[in-house]
Length: 160
Image (cartoon, rainbow, N blue to C red; front, side):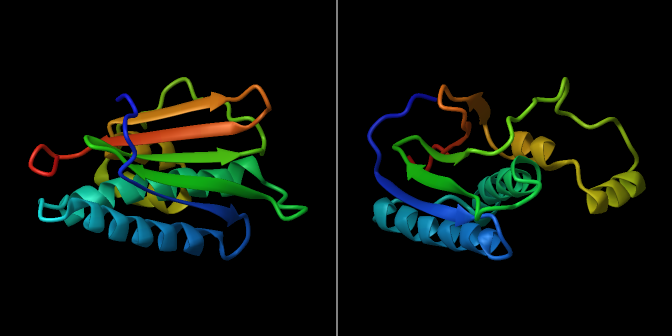
């Protein structure tokens, strides 16, 4: 998806502490308010559609907290920007933590529902969930040494 004219956006610096994930959830709530205002009299994405996007954002944010800053010293943080375009929404998460090493394969091994329930309690499915919930998941290590994640989800046709 190509970025075009931004119709609405919110951005925040998220602390990597006990309050950080609360900040992520608050920003998502504020973003849906921005989407509602921008929609005017047009239809809004369904709750399920919005929940899918939120799951992807929260999973990547949780991975940043867990893996980019495992020692959590010196008050680390990351930025989260949420943007609304004419045909899609986007999240950009940027951190200066440990470089992300992409796995060889994102999809989990085939398991039974019971095994999946146990595995989900232990973690390890965040990246797979993010890929499953949005249309695009991208990561790059920038020239200045930051991890930059980009998540994008196409707006349903009836919303555009």
